[in-house]
Image (cartoon, rainbow, N blue to C red; front, side, top):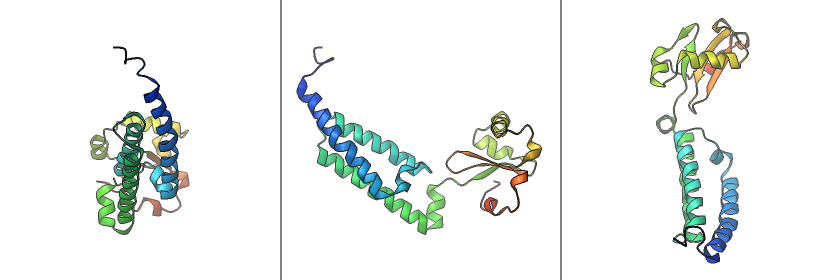
Amino acid sequence: METLLFDGWKSVLRIVIMSALAYPFLIVLLRMSGKRSITNVNIFDFIITVTYGATLSSIITSDKVSFADGAAVLVMLTLLQYLVSKTAAGSKRFSDFIKASPVFLYYEGNFNEEQMQKNRIRKQDLRGKVRQQGMSSFENVEAIVLEGDGSVSIIKKEDVKSKDALEDISEK
């Protein structure tokens, strides 16, 4: 019970030293790997981000994980993330497999009920998004798109001159 609140200065000192080593190491590693590594655009990036956090936590708090072991894990995660993103950039098929595609939730006056139900989005949610854009009616909305990263984009009718940004969006 005495180790519940304080287990001695050795473990505290280890945490301080490992934090001072591992945190800057991860920052440098992420900066070297590019901006893509610090965005959450798909499920793979989300998994990598969570895993980075869990690994950093283990390095700092577990006396069973050395700095070298933790650094190796962080380097491998970064390398795997780089390889997946590089492969996705070169292969549409692989990219489509790991990334969610954008879909219309509303387009040209019609709600896409199938996609709304599949993605657990209600009309009330879309009404709120439209209001957040300062609009009071769907009459001013050309399209509402659920992006691959889960964000919602609203395209106003008055902004539509060309629809080239809407070409790759699935209605199904």
